[in-house]
Amino acid sequence: MALETGWGLWLLGGAFLSTVIGTRVFRSFAIHRGIVANPNFRSLHQRPMPRGGGIVFSLVLIFAVMALWVAGAIDADLMRAIGLGGAVATIFGFTDDVAQLGQKAKFATQGVLAAWVLFCFGSEPLLDLPWLPTTVDLTISWLALVWLMNLYNFMDGIDGMAASGAVFICLASIIAVLLASKDGTLMLVFGLLAICCLGFLLFNWPPATIFMGDSGSLFLGYCFNVLIVKTVTEEQISLWTWLVIFGYFAGDTTTTTLLRICLINRWYGPHRSHAYQNLARIWGSHFKVVRGVSLYHVLWLLPLAIWSTLEPFTAPLAAALAFVPVIFWTLSNGPRLSSS
Image (cartoon, rainbow, N blue to C red; front, side, top):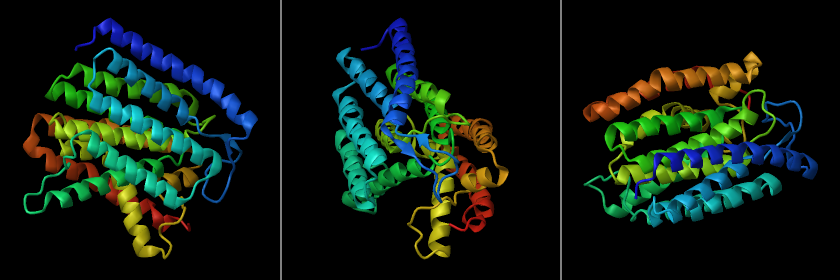
């Protein structure tokens, strides 16, 4: 069922206003209830900051997706994936924001969520390697989805980084779908996620007055898992194009992790050694770093994503071009510049 344009615009506007109002209300609630992030050796802020604000845009998106399902605009698979799985991700993330859960609990939850995404869309692997059994392909896909949820948490280290990145990822995906399949309902889902993150970004843009916390970063990583699996299995956006769109986030986190494995004994421990964190500390400005990454997104990754969509045979090259500058950037400015 195709949605009328007017109905979609009302839904987008309602989601934006709900996020803005809800974030403002939650910020006051978090301060009064002591749901704050205190400065520590990992942090790049100097005073206690309310956190857990991601629960607002997460719930707004969940209810918007449920409204689309009730209207018959999306199928039950997508509703179950975002509605039920997203609710679990949000509740678990908010519990972690308040009670600081352990790493084992986080990994177990991420593993269950990744398996749920694959189950919702027919248990099809993201990458079909003909020389490997299907179970191996599925395992690789599961590991990739778990990594993406961790990846998004790692990128929530300075003001505005994770939220602005989500807005870009959604807008780039809308363009990719428009060029490939023109699926209006899918574009609306991406638009809703973008508008919710934009509403939150009004409070999270440097200098931030609230952090999204795990209730936001885990939810965003999970939602992108859902949309990646859906669009790849339905051949609306290729896996290569997704690698281009995630070029900065995936390149930074993967290179940083591999460097830490080589340089640091307890490489898996808490740290703030990503290139973007080091430069925010050295420059004394979150804004300069977020602006630079945003320019990289728009001026480099977006043209590559469009190119890989219009000319699919170039997609592997486009993905390489998306990653190579980030790899060199991280080698120069990542863990080697940090003592943690």
